[in-house]
Image (tube, rainbow, N blue to C red; front, side, top):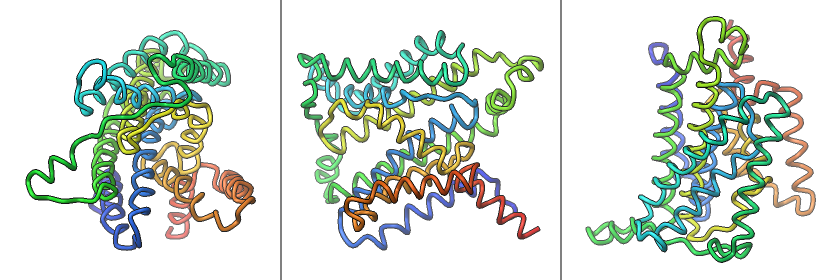
Length: 319
């Protein structure tokens, strides 16, 4: 293990967890929970690039999830595209919109940037809610089936839908995590991380601050869009809630809770906040209070996030 790079260790840990977890699933419901973990994990991996690497905040990232989700609902109906190409179209639209919107709002800093991104997310939510002639409005709309299960059946392979989505979302998450980890160790990643420490210092050593901030915003938007597409295709239904403010806050909370500077940490945070509400149902009316208390305690005593803080404490004891 000492000869493995942090990137390899992270990917091996993810692969091990993905392969071992189904051994403890008593029913197909747990495959669905696992799929939701992976889909949320993909979205927060994009936020690691934006928040953890580049040090920028976004409270409207669910808007890009909504764009990806509705692309999978609308493109097959109006453009005749298969769901996979619809997902790619949603990612392109999200990236282009992030580029156009990011140029002016990324000049802002701190809470000004947070409010600007919040406004963008609310705008997307309002469009999806009010343009009923196109999006179905608050009632949402159906999403065409991916067709992968039928394709597998045609070659003699029968896989339950819940299991198929588990493995498919896990594969996409691993790909997204690998790309983010490669970015971290590249020259581009070093430039992004220099922004997190000090934009002034980064500019002094020749880093194009505006360019790299915009790059991080666009990449994270594409991650969120693909995440939204996967969620829509799995549920075969989409509503404007996917682009809502609460979803944006959940994504940021997952990222910060697990550790915004760590891909594995953010995915862990996404997994915890996706699975924990299922386990807290025993508290009935108090489950949200217990969940909030747990999050507060983690933020008070593990300020860098769950995974980075625990790794640091373990390293100190070993030393």
